[in-house]
Image 1: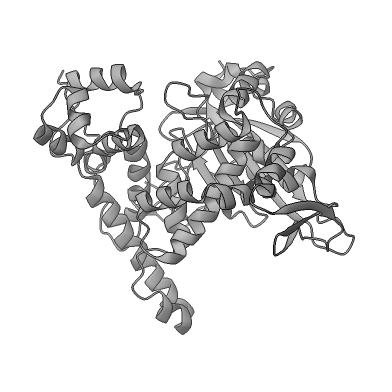
Image 2: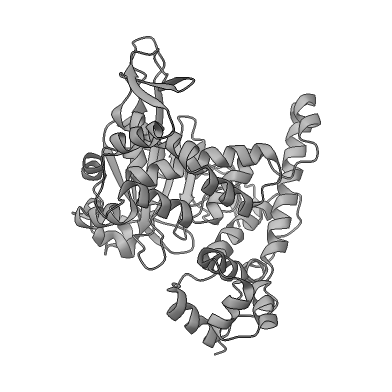
Length: 465
């Protein structure tokens, strides 16, 4: 059987950038010529076995995941896009994988073009002249562009993560995050105090005086303090990272700056090596980790989805947050599980049921149409403003991993992972889900013919051929 060729230009470029090497020096480390490296980085040639070996030896590259992340995400995204009635037929899955692997720039350009088409259709349907005038030439909204930036980085930004760890553990020992943050801002002439502020207000700044709401949740106060430390004391690093991202407009860059500052805050509150060690020791018990690091459950779940440092990877998790309308407001995945980019999420995911049982963890064994099995964890979280009449923000968070990692999670205890019928069939989006008998299907799959029997008496008014 012929060996599958690996095209991983993006991974090569990212490895070179993380190492701070020029193309010439990187080529020397890999034992190849400069033109050959250039061809591999641009996906004009596959990576040879010798280069793969050198990548592992010289840079600690995980060969099992090389080039897989971006390709799998793009395959799912293209499947969703091509399920639109605009297209007469969906190309075979093998063709989509070839495009995502061998021509990732072309695949991303196609997704940008399709996104622009959808936005144009939505503007016309809504007759929203203001949005139509402002976004007429945009390939994607700034928010979507930033979301995709983190999505295609596996939600792990190495330079920012390591800087946060150095800040939080300067001598290998964790500092008190509130004290460390306050001292860092004091060195910039900013005085940090606690005060009584209006509900829903975490902090107030007046020149060099920074007041935090004494009634706010401690985890929220510390996180916001570290966010401000990132903006004040790590500005050069954030700007360098933004330069590498090459966002299309200033608005996207400003949104990403906030996102990177939030990333620094989470990584400083839960520094990589201590957090990874605690997660493994506590078998990823979110409540224990929340207590140990003074973080909220959502902050802990989000941090677990970022533990993808080369040479020290944690369990690959996906993390999702949804609101009460079922809208995904955060999504990150280091697994093969991907989330709907253009349509709604599968209603069979337990995360949608978390609102029915607030304060409880819901466990779910699930299997996607590709046969991959997962352990899913969901919980409702509420953000209380600290005043009776102020609105409470409610979300549900979901965390999951492939079943092969379930033994490292306390939440797998007592579950029969060997029984096939214990796994509930779920999908990604109804528009591309092939399951013919789902009782929660909202729309038929676009790429399957339908039959409309006159005597149909079931949950759906049609049959999927």
